[in-house]
Length: 221
Image (cartoon, rainbow, N blue to C red; front, side, top):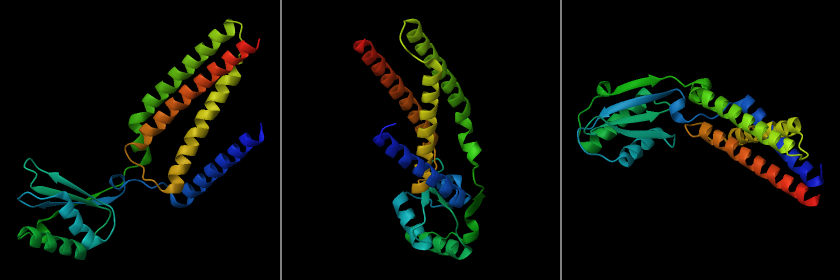
């Protein structure tokens, strides 16, 4: 291992360790819809802009993340998703929306739903079998690929190359999730698909480098 490779390995190791420590202390930062939160449905009865509702909500609860959606067939009702809101803030929110749209809603007429958090295993559940199947398909493909090279008389160590590929894949995934943990990027719908994409990219790059390496060996003979 040359000096440059050692430096890269040390940096990756430090990032992964920092990610593990951050996850252990603070946990992962799940997106709002996956945390325990409240959904507030308010009947507006007329056209409205999501941005206007968002501005009102932020006046009441501050700069916390909020999700605004139009609901119902005629989009005359708004669904507001916030992590938490007090009774006093809910009263203020209702008052400001009434003033904005000339409504007479009472706080009791608002539909407030407490939504429990989504567990990490439930988030990744839809991707488990596709990931497992993809992993074994790629591993079998890599094995056959290396076997063909071996039978063609080329100097290829099948087990070694597969272990290298597996190690690189694991390192890339650990690095990815360590960066997510350290930077506090929210875990959401695209987190796992990006992980799978990184796995495919790792596979393509590994096979390309292996092919390039074998071509170089053949030329040097």
